[in-house]
Length: 279
Image (cartoon, rainbow, N blue to C red; front, side, top):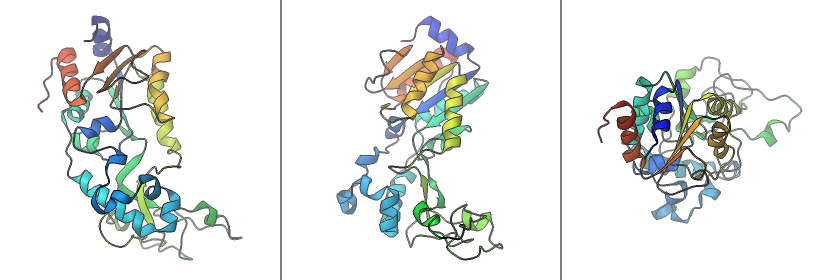
């Protein structure tokens, strides 16, 4: 249960930040990263097929593995937790959603201001091998479409964003950028890669400016994302944790609610604003 003080501060908030992890999507039937392999793919450790090194070695294998993953994610629908987060936009002047998930379920539920710390499985970007990119004496040609290192000597200036947007994560050969010929890949953060500095900066700014931070379904074991709730705590923002199991944050959060997001988030909206969210 939330104290009356916490309830009052949530209702009075002008900026709520919602930070979500894998537990949020698990309720929609999307297993955690390491649990996603089965059948033919059971022998492939994600650490071996979700790294830049793996893509450089065998682009088609890595592409096919992500196609298999995407097939499962596409079958998932936003749960009541996602819907509750989206509904917050009509109740609070500013809502920032920060997610470690790559499944687009927050957007599907209607959330608009979503910072994707680990990218999106359904957006493509150029694969850039920086070791090769700067090995030539000539400076690399940067494509006007994909912003990647051009494979062709000259980019096709007749190609436009719509040509690139037509390419999807789907069965078949690994696609190339229609502008420069660079291999494309899912626009997600693989093991060993850095987060997008612009997205991370936005997440830090949100944690540093919000009145309330709601942390949902994150184990808080991966930095730098794990530090976000603590940044909010240090400045005196209300921090509410929602998770099936306690985490390191549980002891210091203003409230730690044990359970599923699909149950607790709608209950939170009902308790604070009297709003009902259908399941």
